[in-house]
Picture 1 (cartoon, rainbow, N blue to C red):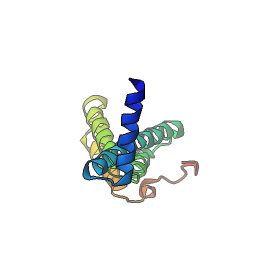
Picture 2 (tube, helix red, strand yellow):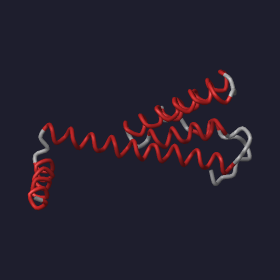
Picture 3 (cartoon, rainbow, N blue to C red):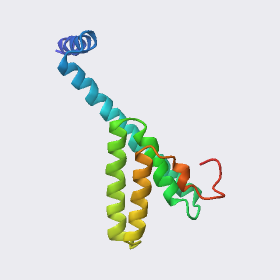
Picture 4 (cartoon, rainbow, N blue to C red):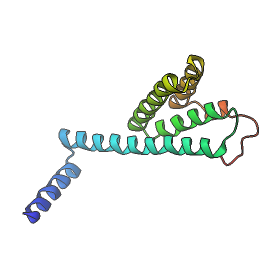
Length: 132
């Protein structure tokens, strides 16, 4: 049974890589989207982790923009992951943390700036260590 399963999977891989029929291209694109989304989520987490580590006053918007920028550079999957994570985080923050609508609006502006390819350094505060 395992042998036949391996043969079937190998056949699918060979068919997809040989002609790239329409369905094969769709499968490959879906795989790339998922890979980009996972990488984008990792980029967002790294920016969050760096923000917590830096603990630098006024750097919040920079890390928002940087995380979204890095994720979106991966492709459509990364941009999708950045949008979903940013929207969920800001939705939660506006309801639970009490930071207010203005802070959420400014965070979302930085998120959109980064996702659209804008330079995150626009939001970088003076004195933030170069490590970030």
